[in-house]
Length: 107
Image (tube, rainbow, N blue to C red; front, side, top):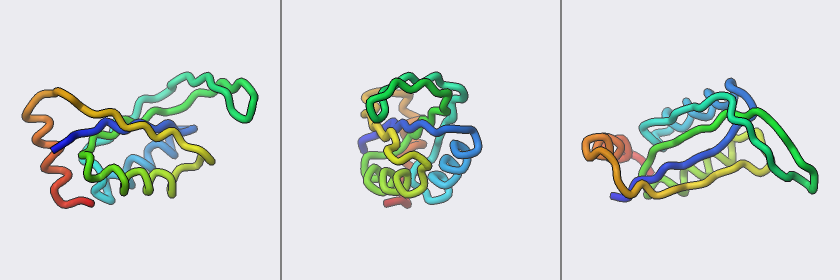
């Protein structure tokens, strides 16, 4: 089974916690980490922006990606949320097996 690390950023901790809990409650991923106070510098609508955001690191399985993406888009406060998925090529076998078990009853 293919594993993914999906990332998104949120404007504040309350939004980050709400989205993370929803992802877990909807069984879209077995684990979400919240990294607080990520400094983001980016262009938006032609203007340089600098904001403090909160990064979600979502560990899931490839089969859950489409449902996870749709859930994030529906519940995200940003007009255009960052949603990036990276393949997990290697990791502790027992941890990846735990992720797989967490994905068994989803999507």
